[in-house]
Length: 396
Image 1 (cartoon, rainbow, N blue to C red):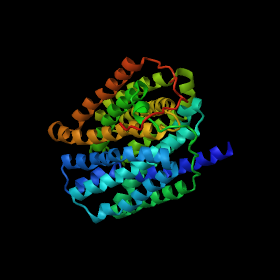
Image 2: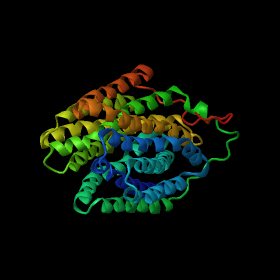
Image 3: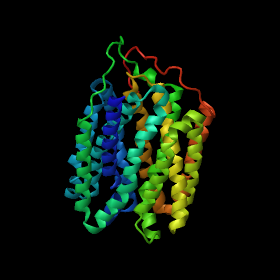
């Protein structure tokens, strides 16, 4: 127990540092590209292509986790961010920023897949949703404080200070990751793993499709929401992200108990319903009360949905396939964010940001309907929780 507590504490710190680095760029990078003269389409391109880099690295990362272990990928992912942070200033053309974002995305791919898999491996099987919900509070705390700090740094000290802070936070994440103890891999099970069989199960495919839809809406929203809020609010727009993160954090603290009481299924579709309400309220934000209400629904919905859907997938995979299964699952996050950013630019150029947000509010409802139609209102726990999937090696 003491060893598990130490590992989870280090993992908590590494996650917080890494996502603090990432969250400082969330509201500031669209403004940076705009200040460089970028059009709405170019803003969407730079933001969206980030996830293409993450997506491209996922298959390699998943196999590496199952063979090399978590710690190596956590450190490599963090160091990639350290390396690219100063390049944002050194190369300021849109083409260069696209290439930098792809490499940055590869670092995120390595880090998030490794940390998510490690948290699932450390957790007792019956408490995986609880552990994943708890460990994710680290990234939520980072997203609570990162955006307002990032905006303050950019406004008061300039973009150079901002990107230096991004690299510094990622360096701290690499240091904490290096202190982790490698999780032992089970080498006694005979035969290679049939990754294709592990992945192509309804219990994996359906949550993956819902994640794709949700993050498509998420990516489109967060690409242009900073610009809308800057125009409408008389105060630091980073406080929206703070309110969103606090709401998400509070519900995640109780996610484990809620999961044990009602099951992961109702948390998935119930969270998506709240998330859709929050998105529909975003175009109406123009003062502090309206901002707080939208952020409450938006953050609480995502905070309920995310640990539950992660827990469902974690319980389907085995110890020997969880890295690749999560790599496939999280690739939906990357693809959704990429598509959201890429599609949102032309929509905003033609119809404006409010029209984009109203349209995207429908997407989480579609994801919830898909989940219930395919798996039911309350999916039963996977029977293959601890059953190894052996056979010929395959990739999706």
